[in-house]
Image (cartoon, rainbow, N blue to C red):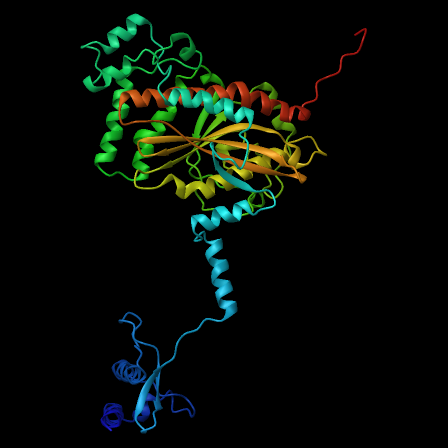
Length: 446
């Protein structure tokens, strides 16, 4: 009975504070036109009405429970009943689709979806028993793994090394022992891929990295002060510096979108290593047709202006120390598969995508101090030669910017990646596009 009395009092209160408006509140005295209430009265009416219904009339107010209705038990007592909000089957399906399109699927589900494609993309560890590591992947892995273990990362004469590791050499005491290991220095082999970066430059680099870590810097600061500097130092000191370039890919996206079967965030990778076009590539560019669906030319799977005419050799993804590199595995896979699809389109007409044999390709990931390398392989499916299987072999820890010794490991590996881009990828790409620039045939007697 008490609940009913309160309800009657509330109704009475509404009647008391909401008197009938005078005639001048009506618009011109016209009939069938609702009266214009003063704002204060309208607000009170909404507040009281909301209180009676168990909801709030103020959009910024604390949310209230859903509407209730009174149901009567066997004794005639009014009890509140909560209406549960049950989504329909169609609504649930719509929510799941929206979640997938906006990239909110869990990493496990994203990777499972990539494996279930007609042309699957799969991550494997090198030690897996589910697939055989291809020969070219194995060769690249062995070369990289040796350097990441510190073997042959230095290229100094005996005299230079003695000065470097001496008391006045500038190397921190705890690192001198590592620099003195007999397997670390290999002058001839090391200098085939690039020259040594000076110790003072490496020390400035490691100091900047340590500052970023101590300041808990965001990814942008790490990119500007550390990652980009490492990449530039490695490319500038490479034995093939004049044939390679590097560029930011922060604004690059897959274009046209038909090259990717899954939605991607706007930002996919951070940097790319590029081939500098030679005369033959420049002539082929003139014959190249615009990308279907994009309307402009590009050697690559993106139409970003500074990346269109320089063929991509390898991609680099970066993360801040507090971000896991595994969070980007799905987007790296989609980015790489789209690149392969674009390369297949560059084949001589009449060849299917599954027939394209792509060399083992390194991918680089920087996570704060620490750098990792993955290797991508692609081969036709045994049961469907028109489709291919892409495997991303993970991962080799290739160095870091925590100290000078590990930084020299990193620079040595980046020199090998640059050497691969020049000695393996460049000839392969030139052969791929050679049909665009047919060589003139010689005529006997002329």
